[in-house]
Amino acid sequence: MNIVNIEDGYCRRIRSYLDSYLNNELFVETNYEVLKHMEICDSCSRSLRDRARLKDQLKSAVMRDYAPVALRERINDNLRAGRRFKLSTLTIVMAAAAALLVIALSVPFVFKSISSKESLSLHAEVTSGDVTGQLLKIGFDDHVYCAIDHGMANRKFTVEQMSERLGPEYAGLVEVLKQRMPQDYQVVVGHRCHYRGREFIHLIMLNQSDEVSLVITRKNGETFPPDGAVAVAGAAAAIGGATAVEKAAGVPIYERAWQNVQVAGLETRDYLAFVVSNSTMDDNLQIASSLGRSIRDFLSKLEA
Image (cartoon, rainbow, N blue to C red; front, side):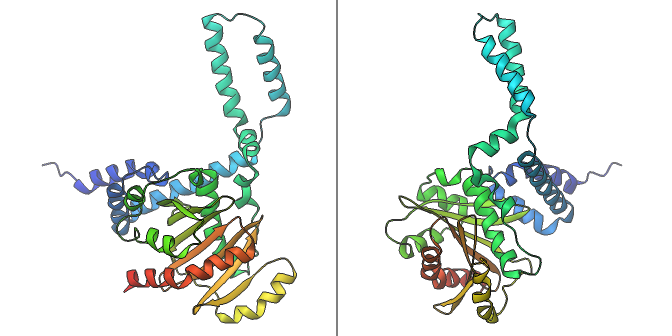
């Protein structure tokens, strides 16, 4: 008698979703299915972490290496010379294949020339003893990865699309931001994204000059230092660390800046929340202060 392991078949189906899950390509119902399965299946959870780590390593390798200059120059010379002749069909096919090879070899060059912002996360240095910086970099990295690298800041979702992508738990954040953000900002993106095996709730607001992300993620045992960090703020600022802790409606807010990107963070019992923007430090802190109590209250209801 053959025994059919239904769970193995279900795991295979869930694992077939993992790449799409990491790329935020699944419908919200399928996302939930994957998330629920991850809560009870250690094997599939490890597979997801491994895929996320591999994806991150590949991205880092691509950003780090260049195609040789001599190779790029030789191919460009050949392409320029080829324009002087009427190419046969076979030649066109061969040229296309060569072009694909050039693209594959020169992807790092293209990536680096598109926007210097794309490598921001690689240059945001945090010392091993800087717990506040390490936590704030979580929000910084997701903003760079999703809003900048993946171009989500250039998208515009309808309220219905944002509600679907955020799911019923977090759809209410759109209205919170509409009420609390300065009037010249528009909420353009609301979705769930994943970076380094971690899930984020990500909303993006735009005005004519600035883009602001609200990034929320569940804690993995992390917590900001106690209010004593206020005493460190002046010393950190003196060496360019730009650390600030303020009481905004009773909510401590922590701040850092990397490559002219400002990050302000706060926490609840189960969540870390970040406001990340390309505005000034004062403006970003003002936005975080305005949102602080509302975001804390919203997340606290989910924790109840």
